[in-house]
View 1 (cartoon, rainbow, N blue to C red):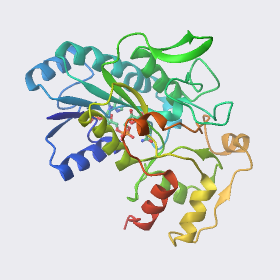
View 2 (view 1 turned 90 degrees about the vertical axis):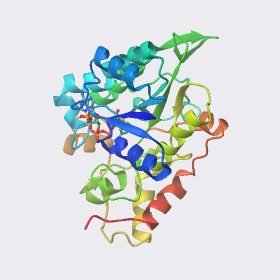
View 3 (view 1 turned 45 degrees about the vertical axis):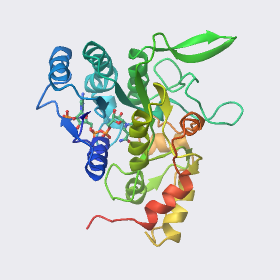
Length: 305
Ligand SMILES: NC(=O)c1ccc[n+]([C@@H]2O[C@H](COP(=O)([O-])OP(=O)(O)OC[C@H]3O[C@@H](n4cnc5c(N)ncnc54)[C@H](OP(=O)(O)O)[C@@H]3O)[C@@H](O)[C@H]2O)c1
């Protein structure tokens, strides 16, 4: 049996759908049912129920978007930075392996050589580096709480855990699929008046879920994995495909610069970045290329009635 924390959330619901479709036994846990933010309560639950694995799909994302994190900082820190540490201790005490849904938004841009950031690159959109959002800072802090830190190795700074890793950290990034939902990236592009042109790595939500479960099923080594669809795509490439596939006839408008976006439409900077998927692909976990995944989601688009 697999325990899922945050099973009522956008990501948690994707796990629930996956488990139901695959007939995998699971138990969703909400804070109301069992206050998993309390280490002792969670440890007791784990010792009694003895799940085979635990997935942390709980966290604070801010509604309608990450701007809300600027105004709800203690909830944001509690959900994204403190909770992972509580889970780590409780899972260690109960001897339960687990995986944590982190985020690729702890990076901005590309590596200097133009390639995507790997799992050993030190996050650069954090409270320590660059002018990050409170949300991104809290997610990076969550990884630090789990023991990751910048270390000097062979003259280079690398992101490494100070302890043996006995859990997964899965980095999700800008989720989307074919189901219209205010949390879906494609819905957001259709809804917003003016868009920010940017190039990004993205995660098809159901591919993300399947890949993370495969990490556990295939017993690939614990540690951090960027779980995005390989490749990159720009906002305008996505909107062009939307028009080409007849999803909308809307004329999309773009901000002239990130500066204009921040001045007119956002409280806090957004992470736009490219992540390398070499590690997860080398572990033989397949994810379709991002452009194919976007095209497929648009081909199967299910608009809200
Ligand atoms: N959605 C995205 O775009 C995205 C992208 C990258 C990473 N992520 C990560 O994926 C995880 C899940 O995100 P989501 O989009 O599914 O979020 P969501 O829809 O808001 O659901 C998150 C769930 O987390 C639980 N939770 C536990 N502590 C919380 C706290 N302090 N504040 C608020 N909720 C708390 C709540 O479940 P109960 O009340 O039922 O316990 C809530 O339903 C988060 O860690 C997020 O950072 C999301």
